Length: 323
Image (cartoon, rainbow, N blue to C red; front, side, top):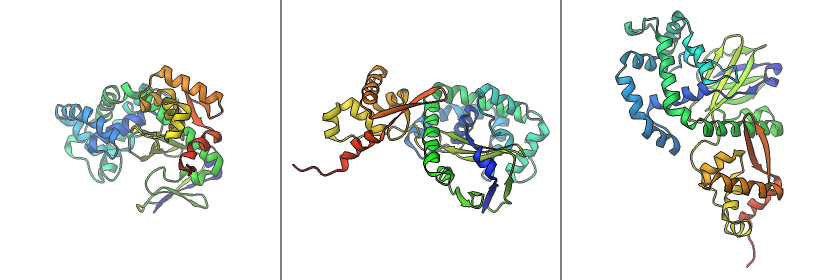
């Protein structure tokens, strides 16, 4: 097993970070594998995988770099820097592009687990990787970034609420496969046998992404990040409110209320319900006035979630009613 020994101060100051670059890397990893587990990612792959493959076919050097950088054993560190938080995609990408050639080549040797082939002994490794990430962002992520960001921020709100209710053990559970809190300051990360890292005086970052991808990254001695897939990804969900609730509130309003078991923005609700933004906004106002829904700001988004009264009303679908 491999774990991080996390001091109390590091854990107490740990924070969630939204990273456009991490979202682009997660998209690149999904394209690289060419497969996904969720229906939303499969639809996205159907649209973008042909263009990705055409781009690499036209640039065999970059194809060789990405195969080495995303080797099965480990990601090349220069491609997945831990985010500082608050930066734009361009800001974060510049850090990748500015990696010295010798550092990029050394990272590729780690990811490959051996010496570099002749085709990778070059000085433009980081620049070519940055160009590919720029293409992935511009062509496949940026058009949908507002909705993706809303999903990420909803995940942060939900996990922050769980942290407040149940503590770090619950908040960290299941962030990535095999990850869990072992106690005594030990955070289990994966089952591979690697030396534990002792984290004192550093930043611990938790970075959600919408694709079903996960990895670890660090800037040794300064910043350590766990990138993990959001709990509520972009796959459509069927709210399936009970008939009694639909009769009481109306079908559209009942659909909105049924979806708000986790925090969602109005934009996300529009995508999930198929209703117009105006209709969703009116439903949310009525539900808030009735004390069934509350709202909170997360970054640039306003997120809505059911109150305890709203939970009780929706939970009535499981009750047995006479007659």
